Length: 456
Ligand code: MN
Ligand code: MN
Image 1 (cartoon, rainbow, N blue to C red):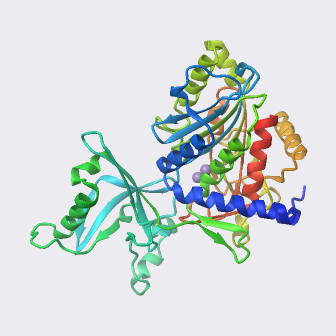
Image 2: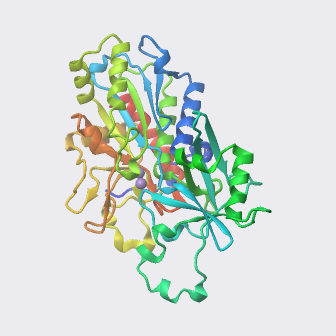
Image 3: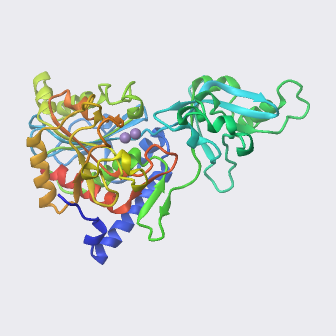
């Protein structure tokens, strides 16, 4: 059952491929730090790879490549296979939303000569990790006339950044006595965005300066925050990590590392596959897969219906059969074993960074609560596919029984009666502003997803 470090298995040529894939991934990460940006970047790459918008296609034939864009926040890619879709499709699914701080709808205020944007955090974060680091603002402001103004501030070398202050250690006696969860509280995650008064402005001059800049640079006014989605994320690009450059430090590996491995696996299928291949990238996983762009919405099922229809094979029954006969890898990150926090893991069933793609038979918490517990028959089939294709994989669960838990989109797709298992890349410092993955694991994930698409 021992798993070896993947780097010990690579030839010089493979190592070059691993580093090349890592560099490509970093570019994808840096181009998409929000679900909207990741969706747009995915569609841009898909179009370059010959995928067309499903809406622009009247009929579908084997070999056709199409994508579906759901509200600019979720994307599906399909390659139509030779076999009838009724027999099921091979699905790889990941999420492209990340923990972050969302700017509130009435966010701007000033206090003691600072202008602030008030935020509401999104997803599971340790709030104390978000203070005193450079932050950037990404998102859209949609004006009353319907025009969308994209905003990215804090990524260019010459851009200013924003950030959240923390109390100096000299005056921290009472703060340091608090429990970790309340050392920094949610309502105190307010982002400093200015500190210079607007000349001639009597009332709220610091806020006025910020508003005048927003007006000048973006043509937006304070009321436009009502229809804005602005996300505060760590500023800056991903970096090679470690003196040996074996790892990548980046914001949003959870779950863009799997999203990227998925799209690379899809683009690597250049032939017409026997079985239809599907890649689903969803939003809102970090808050329970809710809303119209989360996995619980019906857009995946609807896209399958449209595709069956454009293949001339739609009926309610063929759709149900297609969904039930499908196989899925729910591709999401796993907790990388951290020797500094060894007590939180059960070593035999932990995911080790650098030991290949992980399969999680189940997730959930306590007595597997909330988990999709994959079938042994399905795992047997996948083991064989991985071994036949020289994929280095490991099996894991999140951590020790009863120390915590987490969920993915697996259980939602299982509702259709299809076979689903979680599979992903081990991450160190998951959900921190800067997370760490191993380039070898990314390489194995791409290999695994390609092998799955062509053989499941
Ligand atoms: Mn995830
Ligand atoms: Mn997560």
